Image 1 (cartoon, one colour):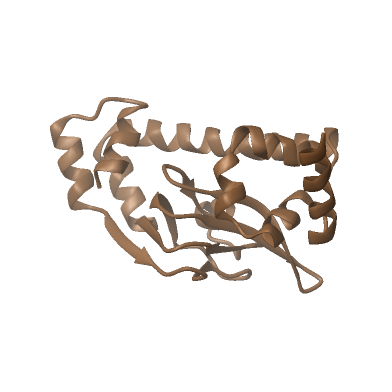
Image 2: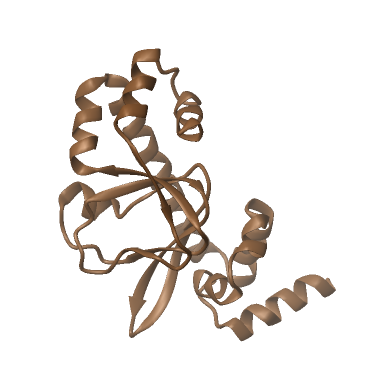
Length: 190
């Protein structure tokens, strides 16, 4: 709970009344490793703030899993299009570790938005961060090869290399696990 309050206070200082409202209106959930939070084709009715753990968003393509993004502590994760438009999701979301989530459902979001304009502003800022992250990913696939994307991961999120199984990192980079091994060897020997 304190993790979420601290995170929100980075963007705008919440009043005691707003903090009490958050504490009274959220659900914290412990989720086991490898738990699917959302399957392709389901309509998303929840979004999550991660207080502990790691979550993966991925697509199923020709029965292969292709990782789009990894979410860790102090990040929101959702199928934003599915959640906001109430349409079937085109991807899956699953935990990679035992994870603690703050869960928001559609009704709670409406309740938060009507309670305080700060929550509406926070929602907009969170969506802007997600948009920026998505644009960065698209840009990296257009402008960099797999080795360059791996070097970015090492520089910007080195903890993920230790936390996430290599085959998921390979799908995130768009290469096979064998190619990732060759990339790692080249980086170590250089």
